Image (tube, rainbow, N blue to C red; front, top):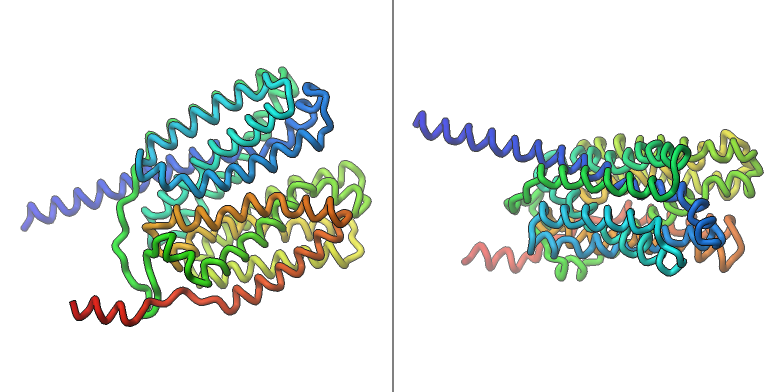
Length: 412
């Protein structure tokens, strides 16, 4: 009996160590992967190097976002075949090589291929797979695990902003990309070596009617899957559009000075990180769909202010902070929400498809603005989608099991 107890304690201790090392490795990896959100620093230097308009160069980030989302949806298949460690190392090598290649491009199409397609694919392959793998280790604290991992992703954009800005200011474009690529590759490989593939989670039922561990084929047949997809797309569209053009909104829409408008970037970074931490932790205490409802309401308040208020500097900061807070919180809570609805074991596959809304949402705002003439039209579409999403949040319930199947299984 004593030997059995000792073995059990040793096994538990080893599992705790594996969980901790995987969490730390995921945080390090996510921090490095989040560096892609410093891309706006490079638009002007690359535009000068390529002799192209900044708007044409900036479009590469839209391609990156879409490629990131597509790669995220495919990463589960790579993990199933090669394991989280090997796939993450592969993503690190591709990301580092791509960053080093970007500074040598001489044509716009080459920039779209490297900075858009390849960089987005490398980042997306590592992002969702390592996040989902980490969350599976903490079924009792899914929100907190997501908050740590995705919070690190957000912090990465802030940390690498200063690193990249330092080298851009004190060195040249080539050196900046080379240092960025070397740092990211090293950090992600170290993080990968700390990770272990999460074991299959025992299927448990939170209630008599809650369905668990649906495959992607089963999940897409439920109305709940598409409801969550609409909500996620709406928040991503709102957040990515406002975050991406906040400085322009401040200058041309609110008529602030260049310095005052630029300060919105710092406000957004703080609000985004706060949303990830606050709503992520809250999601372990109350229903996650209620937390997403809160995020939608906060975003709605921000967009209402942008659309209908006579904005000054402070009200503008309030509005963009609301949108960024909502976006950060939603991105953090959604993986756990999807696992609540469709199970942990197939989280990467199920959330991967929903996550396509991130890439699609990143383009919709810009398309609406170009077709219908500016910020007001986009804010109007956002408002309509947010109202619809709020109604969906209030009414959606987790999928229910097929009772006849339950009875057959019991009889067997």
